[in-house]
Image (cartoon, rainbow, N blue to C red; front, side):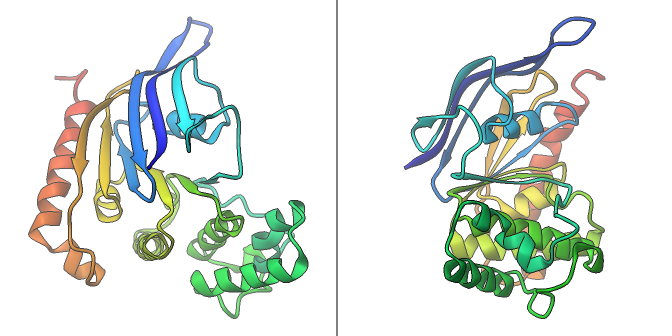
Length: 258
């Protein structure tokens, strides 16, 4: 079943110097339970595309459907995780995770069961009553992901979710996300600048062109993820795919500066 369907999507932004085209005739299909990453040059419209899928900004034309329904605004079927942690600083880990459930009237007992399960899932047992200022960057992002998972969205939209983390924490969070996806099989669309991250996590990687962004190349990522991170990273198949995706992005980065 197709979870996301985008056809002939266009988007322009108004500016003093005139309209600026951001996206041009974008076509994307994402199957239910699939993990797809989008990479491309800076400013090519990756995040704009994600915000349109999330219903935060309108498109200027084209078809945008989620679960067979036209996207007209934000919805609980789509959970969004941004690069910034966006946690409430005055709420504890448990309170941040349960906030959306409480606002939508989920009964206390069900809220508590859901939050306890997610705290175990993200490995923050013992930190339930800590405030964001008492957490590391990786812990904060785990809480942000858990808060999104709490209301059980069908789709996760991730906008550079680990971009603000140091290299080692970023790798740890990638492993956490991979484990969560393998456990839940949510449909995931992730925007990232990191080619290694895209290949390591995804079943497919889409490469966008310079602005106005459009999908110019697609890579199926068929690698063995049954072992640990080290086994995946040093695998010849992984390295070949990473190099192919990197070269595809590089060609787009340098397209206007031959």
